[in-house]
Image (cartoon, rainbow, N blue to C red; front, side, top):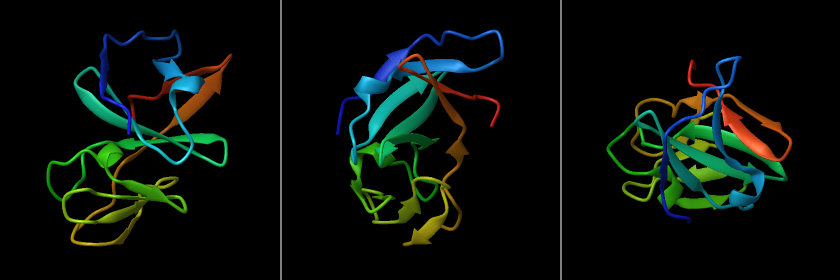
Length: 116
């Protein structure tokens, strides 16, 4: 797990926010960022980058601190599991899904849509 990166967001003309370079996100490991006080977890699965709200919907814990395997992330606090691609709760005590965040990759850079 990499440390959480706080940054002043760079708004693109189309509303997307620059998150980081693609190279900053490792396969099967979470990468935490904070944009406009919003905690976002970036994950790379089979070469594709996905994003979820990084705070577990069950209790305050950063999902990027959890175990990542087979396209799922497990919350480090109470072991709720979420599908990284959709945010869907797969198991555990959480009562709702994690919120998925739209991602686009251009020129080796990752952007997220804060309007989700």
